[in-house]
Image (cartoon, rainbow, N blue to C red; front, side, top):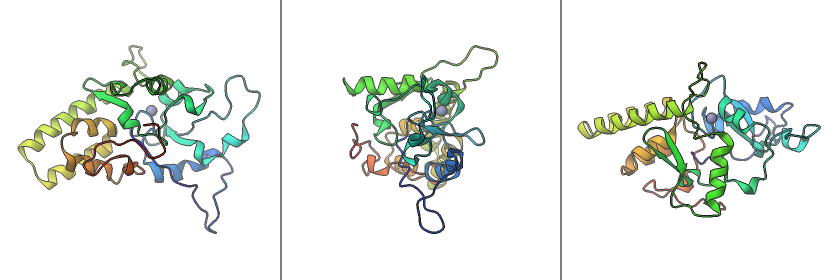
Length: 239
Ligand SMILES: [Zn+2]
């Protein structure tokens, strides 16, 4: 899961903090800061990408919307319908989880061939449980759906992109030049699943740095990686 920095609340034309009249109005600003990817599963999306409240605006059992959460820029991420609906309105104690805007979630979660996602084996208790809670909260490990509608495509797409990234790596070995590298980054930008590309190319510092500064992957927490693209513990993060 790509660690991101949404930055401070955007300013209006007069230099004041933007006052959104409804939370949906923040969508354009969030896409400018984070790129058009789900903050959790990393799927590249267009129209269906929604403003996600990290702490739900109306938690299960609450009688009314919690106003302080509704329009709070620091409570916003972007999410696909699958991550959004899995997360639902479960009320959140922030410190029970790790989050992509506060921690190096790439260091916490391991990606493998076949679309597999799991807690990185280097993460130990009690942090391990926090990572597990995040993975379960958004249903990141859900297997390809066997229902006819096949409405949850996250695993399947991740698996396909992994294979594509491996083929790209093979081609790069046969034709190792700047043009090929640029082409692979453009493919990674249009296909999404940044963490998959970061994992497949983990031995290639040049490719990691290109992925870390790729134009479409806006808001990647560059400071959470060293100059070779290896993940670091995030400043002020738990991992
Ligand atoms: Zn998602």
